[in-house]
Length: 204
View 1 (tube, one colour):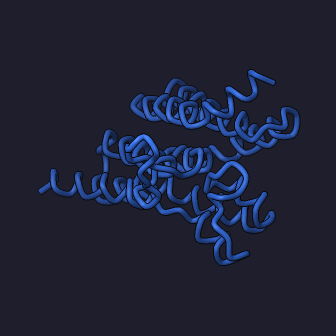
View 2: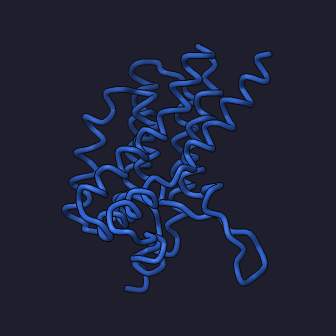
C-alpha cells in the first residue's frame, strides 16, 4: 500500500511541477504564447518581460508553490519518509524545467520537453524543507540580481544558496542530510537548463 502511495505522490509531484502557469498567465493577460517571446521559457522572468511585473510575480509565486506541493503532500501522508520528500521536490523541479505539457518533436525527430529554468520551484522546494529559508534566500537572490544583473545567474544562486542553507541546517540543527542531496540535484538541473544562457555569457 505504501509503495502505491509513494508512486502516486512522486507522479503527482512531477505533474504539478509540470503545470506551465507562466504560459497560462501570459495567454490570459495579453493573448500571446510566452514560448514565442524572449527566452521562450515559461518562468517568472520571461513572463515579466512579456506581460509585466504582476504577471511575472504571480508566475513566480505559483512556481514556488509547485516546488513545495509534493514535499508537503509527502510529509502529510508519509511522515518521516525523508527520501520520498526529497524525491518529490526534485521531480517537481524537473517538471518545471521539462514539462510533460510542453513536449514537442524537434527537427531532429526527438521529443523535447520545455518549461522554465527551475529557480522559483527550487525556492519553493527548499522552503518546504525549511520554512524560514526565504528570510535568507530571498535577500541573497535579490542582491545577486541587483549587483550582477543576469536572471540566469540569479536562478543558479537560488539553487546554490538553498543547498548551502540545507547544509548549514544539517550541521547546526541536525536536519536530514538527504535534504542536501535534493539541493545538489537542483543545482545540476538548473545549471543544465541554463547552459545556453551561460554559453552566451561566456561568449560575451
